[in-house]
Length: 241
Image (cartoon, rainbow, N blue to C red; front, side):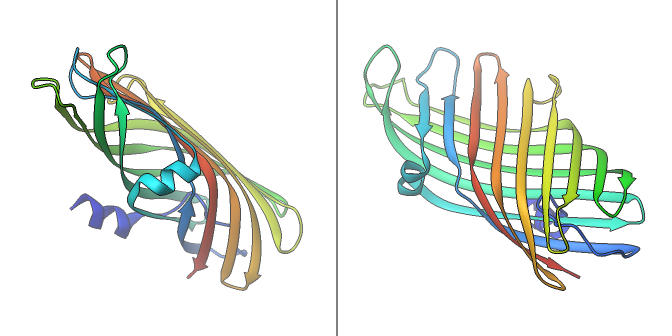
């Protein structure tokens, strides 16, 4: 249900500068070469699995992934969204014990925010928004020692504050900067995201973008939880309707 809802409503972090119109919709499927760092703690005092992988390692461990984003704007009203999901598995060791552990991590996040275009000029735009980011995280740690195997399955929603700027460099080139901050103990203790892209208008309704994205979350409840960062290059293809 959440996946269908997210894909239907995903309305954009990578959206490129639109031509002057009253209403704009852009949809952006993209590829994110994300490295992973963090720790899954299924239960307090139980085994944990630490991840610290570059892009090459992630591609070896990656089981599946899907990413899409978009933008809707009418006048000065702006709505942004993003849906991403991935599943990875790997082997590791239990910290301080050296026991072998097999782990699996599945995560999906859906971000939706709406707000106001505070600055709109021919050379730059600035948007301020408020929204929500929903997480579904499942982690599994298995060891050969009975009683040390554990699973983590949580879902929670964080409030977020968003700022986004778009600077036009020329008729076809632009740069976009995006930042959000949230959590505040409502769902997670902290979640944040930074992204910057360079964008090229290939045709009237076709845009290409390349840049870097960093997404972080720190969730803890009664000693069990997940803290992790997802960082890496990003490539997107935006279609304008």
